[in-house]
Image: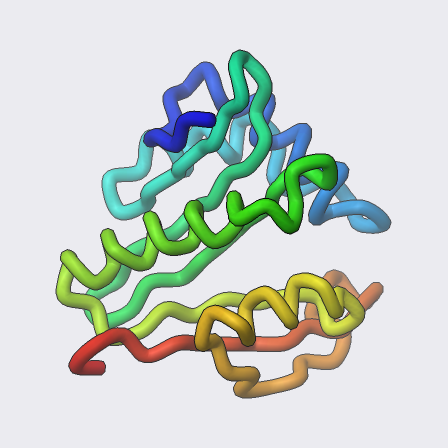
Length: 150
């Protein structure tokens, strides 16, 4: 398994995993073009994990002046519960810490108990329930994690 920064050639695979692992039941918003724009954005890191040629996980994090926002994060179902998500999240958190940011924020579906438990285990705290956050189809939860000194 290899974790590295994404390249433009990763956009279609990231978008496909997003569609099945995150955006199921919703209109597809993280299309290959949108992912490619994130890869090209200097204020965003897109990290991928591959097992041979196959994409098995990714994270997209946008950096602001004082905080980072984890926009999208997924691990293929076949590779969950083996530490890959932790490795990807730690990679992104280390970059945010090195950039001097004070916290990381993210959102998750309120009915995604597996994701919420994962983030809680990694020190993220639920801050708000947002009814209808996901295009009126589902509720969302806002979480954040203070970084050292934040």
